Figure 1 (tube, rainbow, N blue to C red):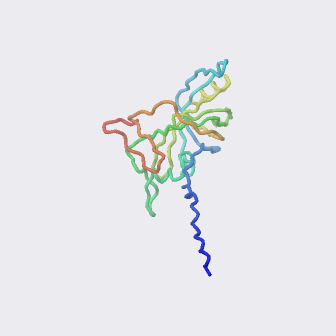
Figure 2 (figure 1 turned 90 degrees about the vertical axis):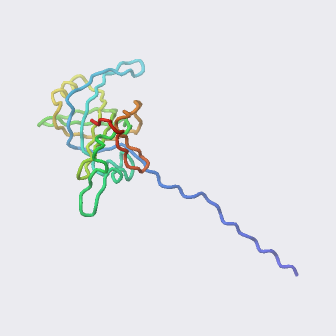
Figure 3 (figure 1 turned 135 degrees about the vertical axis):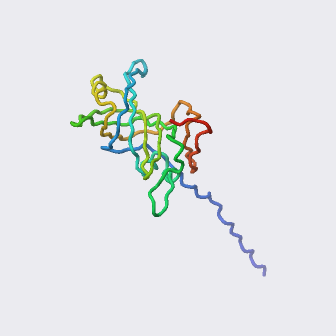
Length: 207
């Protein structure tokens, strides 16, 4: 009697598991100490058939490690800093100066509290642009950025009275985008592929 042939079971070839991606997102915080720049740029934007008043004002704020990782993706802080078990984090490249990151954040709710009275100004659908990061000893990252706001007339005068002063700042919500302007070739940029930033070209001046 002929024995039936044993069936050969082929191993199932499924898709290889995907590596987790490093996703970035807008930074959010409340009641963060910040400093306004020394001037405001007043301009108009065309929204459809309408001219809309807009202003640009710079602000400088410190970012914690978790906020830097949220903005640039997990592990960003570790790529910008070096540390030992017995020392605080120090910048990986101290000589690079500010690092441009080519990211623009849209649809942000911005709240400022100004002066000793903490007078509150609120701006909806704002944008964060021209973001520059400066790693500092201790692990805090100085973030200089441009707030693009759509104010009422009285809000412009209120801001003007508090330029170059310390304020309290809230950033909430937002949608990630990219800067349209090409980066300055003399300014170091941050690659988001797991590598440390490259130093600026030889002979370049970083401001």
